[in-house]
Length: 241
Image (cartoon, rainbow, N blue to C red; front, side, top):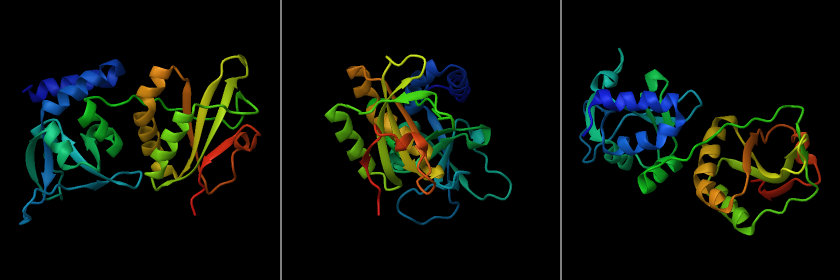
């Protein structure tokens, strides 16, 4: 088992170089981590404390070292050492955050499932659309059938996704470079989880099929963005009632 210092060194290197993230997560599964549990708890199973993330959802904190795990003033908790894999299995279904007081590393439930299953987490690159859209929307999108089936199955399992569109787009400067764009209508507090879940579910298959794919989100309670009113914007999911 690697030392606390080595685990933290690998975490810092992964923050500076995303190519090192897979090696860090594999290491995390076998490393000793620390979590918080109630001081007095007579439940037959170990229960861990959660905190409210700034985006509004609950997350279970865990830590790379005993020092970082010391509860802040005013918080009563006991520190529980666990193997990384054991911690993730115990908290399966919850969002977890490593070292939340140091900027943290947030993993959503879908990412935890992938990490436990395959030993890796998909890389998510943020993609935001500007108000003046710098791309062309094709008059008709022609995505693979398997892609649409995978997206519908995924969003059916994410109750906070209200509606989703798919477009075939190209940069204005290079109209020959087509890519697919998924636009998901979801409340702001669930946008990051939706992106992570989508990329986690699709990354391997999309890479094998060599399909360029981007993802963005919009507030379903606001007016529909102009680019989604184009003829080529295909609504394939929702809206939920």
